[in-house]
Length: 253
Image (tube, rainbow, N blue to C red; front, top):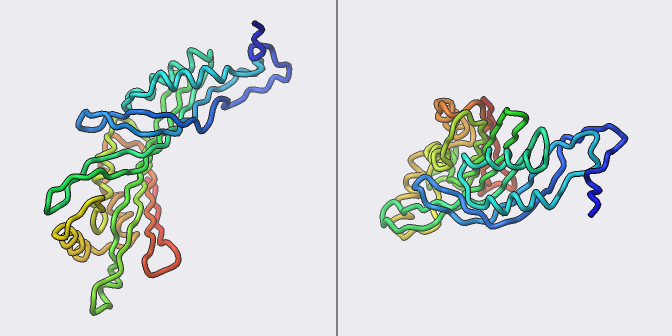
C-alpha cells in the first residue's frame, strides 16, 4: 500500500513538532513506596519532521503511548528514545498531565484517605540531549497574618495552590515536592477529617499565619537546597475567602 507520509515534500521546511495532542489514556505511575497509582493521563507526543518528508505516521504515536502505560519518572526518556527510533526523527517531545494520588493520615485520628495533586511532565530528547521538567501543584491552607493581627475573633483562611515547576538534573519524587509545599504553608489539607482532626488543623493554621508571599519564599528556601534541581519556578495562588479575587506570588531560581 502506498505510503503518502513518506513522499518527498518540495517546500524544504523543517517542522519543529508534529504528532498527537490531548490523547487521554489510563496509566499507572510508581510512587515513593513502590506501589502503582492508577490514573487517567492526557498525553501529547511529538517529533521533529525532516524538511524533505511530507508527513509523520500518527498511528505510531498512539501505539507507543499504549505500550508504555506503566511507568516511573525514569521511563520518560525510554519513551522518547522509542519515539525517535520508530518515527526516524532527530528529536522527540512528550507532555503529560494527570492527577496523582497520595494516601494521607489525619493528624489526630490517624484515619487514611487519598489526596490528589496535579502533575505536569514536559520532556524532550534532541540528539542525545535529554531535558525533563516536572510541575507539581499541591493544595494547602493559608491563614492571613494581617487578619489575625487586627481581629479580635479568628482570621480569614482559605485553600491555596502551590505550584513547583522544576528542571531536573537527577530523579526526584513527587512526594518530596508535596511535602515542601505543605511545610511552607499555614497547614496541609486533607480529604478526611474527624472533629479532633479539624480542631488540630484549624489551630495549627492559626499558629502559622502565611501570606502568599511568605509561602512563596519558604518554598524557594527549601527547593534551592535540592541538588536534583537545575532551575525552578514557584507560584502560589490563594483563593481568598473574603475577596472576589485571588492573591498571587511567583519566584524563579
